[in-house]
Length: 342
Image 1 (cartoon, rainbow, N blue to C red):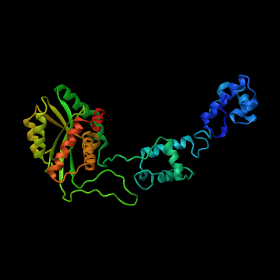
Image 2 (spheres, rainbow, N blue to C red):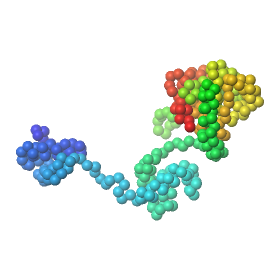
Image 3 (cartoon, rainbow, N blue to C red):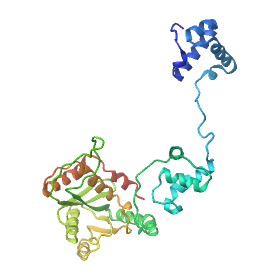
Image 4 (spheres, rainbow, N blue to C red):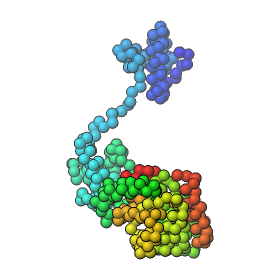
């Protein structure tokens, strides 16, 4: 023990643990308690305490221990009460239990607790409980109130397995399709700026838009078509022509209930190409079942942060380049979603 410590109270807990072990090792080796106290920068009483702990419990008694009260001690809400509140937050909206709003905040969770139990908690106190329950403040997904749970259940349990089985029998492939539109004046995302002064993004004052139709396969492969006009049955047939030309086997195309998909023109095209493409429809108001939505979400939210095109033709070129980059250079987030589609 050659390194003299000035004051052990200023050391970190781990350094204090090492000092205790060194001090006891010196005592075992024959050093006097006074010498150990002087070198370690502690009082003789402290050295006596180390020695007593070592004799009673060995080295284990000298190791660092957590300080303060154990987690959960003296909590206002018991375990059963906490579990009940947590389940309400996960299973219901505030308006479902007599409170205002559809999204849970710390204030509303505090009001819920006050309604259920004779306890009033501060905002930070509610936040501690929420974090302890493994919850975090998130942006929720949206679901249409018109969506039919029974239709979704049938799709997951019956329709989707039947589509996959039919594609395997045909030696075909399943693709999910979706449409998206990008506007020239659309701005998404955030940027850094001076507090109190909103940053300005300069874009063309001319308003124009470009649309895209894309499909993604169950292995993440993507096909797309960019067009300037509105999405109609004629555009859908043009896309089907291009899609059929990309495959030497039958395509089972999963789409939503857009009127163009159900039009007579598209119906006639499919009747003339029975061996090329077959359409399958998702339940109404169920974009969450379509992984193709994620492909277009990547494009819709990512491209407006980057594009500088001063014209409709330039915007179409940027969309084409961005879609090609998604398909070749980086895996789309939709690929993982397709892989886990039930």
